[in-house]
Image (cartoon, rainbow, N blue to C red):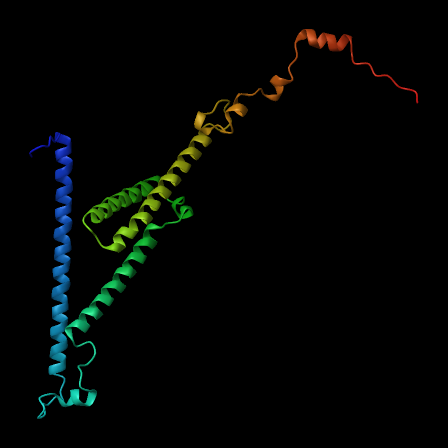
Length: 227
């Protein structure tokens, strides 16, 4: 390209993102087409039911007797625009239900994770990371709002699993070094720098030989004072 110098690594990364975006766009177009076909099929079924329902003979005014009994307007939901509204409500309800189900699946409690083995935790972590990558791609390609709101829950799930794995690892190390004189630095109590460097009680109370003899030969004298 004119005016740009791409490194080999940058070009490969850019090509990968373009491919992912194209795949996401094709998937979104396919889903839209399937929804449109489903809506048209449902409209045809409703028209067949309204036509083949029986008792709909036309009068002199050019409209059915059933429509005269029900009123001048159409029945609610038979108009294409009304069908679109109904269809939109159905899709919104389905998306909300799916999002709540996915959030419940992602938001696993920490005490439940502690009962799992290391292999299970690694598998679940791998799945969540793959899901996070897909959600970030959907965010770049203007995905659905329910997917964008799910990114936070997936990230929290990943952090929770990593925390549990770290706690299990440290607990295993504590069991190995239990009863030993020296511990790794990350297993020692942190406290503060001044506390870590101050003398121990035995070191602070230690005395030299000269001081010990002096206190022995010349003890502290106590005098009784007459009132």
